Each structure stands twice: as C-alpha cells, then as structure tokens.
Image (tube, rainbow, N blue to C red; front, side, top):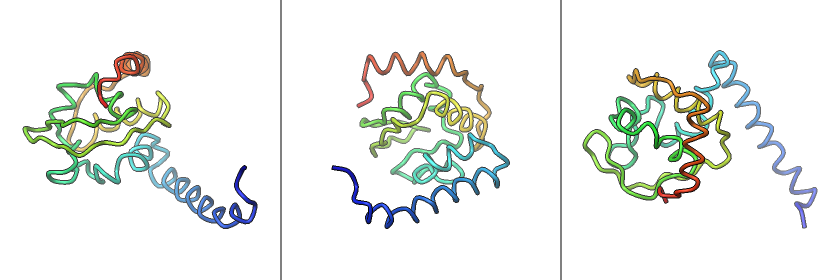
Length: 144
C-alpha cells in the first residue's frame, strides 16, 4: 500500500535532522567510523564510557568477558542475547536486542573500538575472522 505522500512530508524533517546529526558526529569524531558506530548503536545502553547500567546492562569498560569470549562478540552484536551473561563476576539478565542491519564490516569496527577503548587494551579482530564467526553463529543460533 505504501506511505501516503502527506505522511512522508511529516516525517521528512525528522529524517533530515537525523542525517545532519550523524554527519555532525562524523565531523566531531574526526571521521572515526568506529566511534560513530558505537555511539549510534551501542552507547544508548552501554553508555558513553562503556560503563553499562549497574546491575541491568553489563559494562564494556574493563570487561573480563571481552578477553574470555572474543569469539562470541560478533554474534551477540548481530543476533542479540536472551540469556544471562556474567561480566566481572556479576550476572546480568537484561536482553540485548539484535543489530541485524549492521554489516560484517561495521561489527568489526565496533568490536575493535570496544577492544581499544574504555580502559581495554585487547587485540584487534580482523574482518575475515568476524565474517567466519558470524557464519558459524548463524548456523548454531545459540544465543537466542
């Protein structure tokens, strides 16, 4: 059926404002795509400094989970998580929504951003490894 043209004109200003804000983020962050991707897709829950929401959403800052299970990160970002997760000795039960619209490249950038920020100094991951991990978890579907 489609969207009536009058409704399109009503939502167009919001779309335009969103695009302008994304452009500003790119400029302010010195074109650091990974930082912009984190801010756009992760920061609203995991917060600006990766500290998470105490007792509800796990931290990414100095999170032992990143070092223990780096092979699970791509699948968690793409498909979300509906089971408890233990980070730094604390169990979290809040579900993480999927980010199915993110490309393999964008997921790689987000993971590398998290691995090198928020007090983390962990090895970067490469695109091919992330693609392989995503293919495996797509088959297993074990996070939901």
